[in-house]
View 1 (cartoon, rainbow, N blue to C red):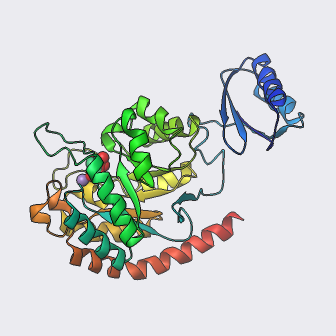
View 2: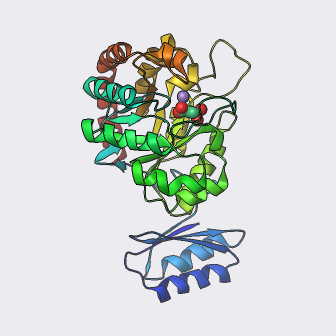
View 3: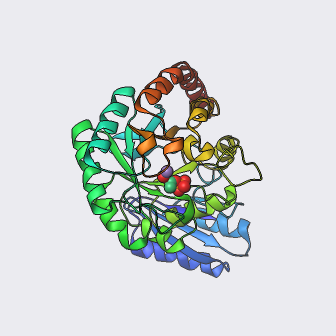
Amino acid sequence: MIISMRRGATREEIDHVCDRIREFGYKVHSIEGEQRVVIGAVGVGDVTACLESLEAIPSVERAVRISVPYKFVSREFKKEHSVIHVNGLEVGGDEFIVMAGPCSVENERQIMETAESVAAAGARMLRGGAFKPRTSPYDFQGLELEGLKLLQQAKQRTGLAIVTEVMSDGDVDLVAEHADMLQIGARNMQNFALLKKLGRCGRPILLKRGMSSTIKELLMSAEYIVAHGNPNVVLCERGIRTFETATRNTCDIAAVPVLNELTHLPVILDPSHAVGKRSLVPALCRAAAAVGADGLIVEVHPCPEKAVSDGAQSLTLQQFHATMNELRPYLELWKESRVSAFAAAV
Ligand code: PEP
Ligand code: MN
């Protein structure tokens, strides 16, 4: 069960509700947000009697039974699609948000040139790794703080919001100081110490699906972040491991509509890591719009053959412009279907 307290509920009122929940045999997990307190009741007990009792308490706004293990992120908990605010942008709102930029921040010239070009093409956020999760310890590991500063400079110049990866709980505060949105990479989707730390980082999160993780596991990881105090999570499908070798990963395009049924959180697609090959990226960008994703995160590099990471899947600046142009009619349809989905939900 999830119990939402009324705004401004006092400590005594919250404690009273927690005591009642415990009397019915449940364990209490309360989330004290800035605006309101939400209490999760987990365990085995008489659900109907407990719900009836709680609903009779004036400080309780709503008490609902949630059958799935990912409580706060489920559609059962919240019917309306969530809108996540990132530096004035709305992810999950009525704009399809495109995030673009290099795999890694390499130097000033590379990031500035990319930022200016992707902004002119219609991207709204700049991506670029300053802390890089690399399979080999001998590969480029990222510019770290210098990379974060370069991203900030690029934001100042272009107005693009910044999304960048954080790999360890010890770096969360540093990355949160420099970025508008923190990216959790596929390899860290189940780094629970990191997920817990994100609960209090004060920034929205882009949570990427682990390459061998189920949709349920992705939602449970999102639940960690929300349960620890941060409701601002955007999910990202980035391809999963299968027996197929024609692409770097297999793009689970169905994950987008599946997630849209199961959760109210916005979902974006990363076609670059999903396929690993630039010629395939534009088609998947169009697919993302067609299946109702809330946006894209795409790798773009001014000279992919010189990229220190993921050159083969990075679009050139010109290819990114062409991709955005090709996307336009699909985005018109996307907008129409979004308007009718909102109308149906009302
Ligand atoms: C990236 O975005 O460059 C990245 C490392 O992605 P993923 O975590 O999905 O592999
Ligand atoms: Mn990459």
